[in-house]
Image (tube, rainbow, N blue to C red):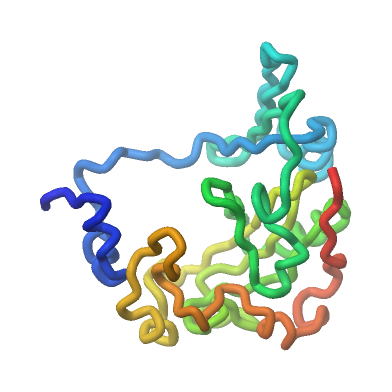
Length: 249
């Protein structure tokens, strides 16, 4: 198969992208999983309090940087690490740029700046999701979402409860510096393209080109829609999640 230029890839529809890039390639770089993800901390003591004292992750390595900074690693499971830098002169994070702006979350806007890491999700056992959610909420560090049931069969991408179409269930939360995080449990349902409910809306859409429409979303279809959340009360979810706040670091 002849290689394509960026311009040629940009012109493909989503269906054509799936056809070309949805297959394994014999010449692909053999990636063996994530080694580590590194954030920047404003207060390493608070970061370690959250991850190690609060959540129990083992501190595996500490590095003193030449400029007086620090680089710490924690056990992220299956050989991966959660890593943090502390830089003495790092600029402050900006909601909506370096991480999500929680004040916009209820309206479905969870965007962050180009090149940012929007969120990181970890696999956990499904039967422990609610236990872990309550544990994280008890730390009172920031936002903890209700339990969410992801699906390809609704326009919002979520359902009110788990059913045969659920791809994974999860909850989101924020770390000490506003890091947008997720604990998730994937179901046995195949991880495949959109379900029938979204196929028509997505048909013919092309790759996003700068300010153009996103490649796979109709302008009227939103991943996280305010109307979806407005239809539920706290008791419809699990109950005890704290008020949405963006705590300063």
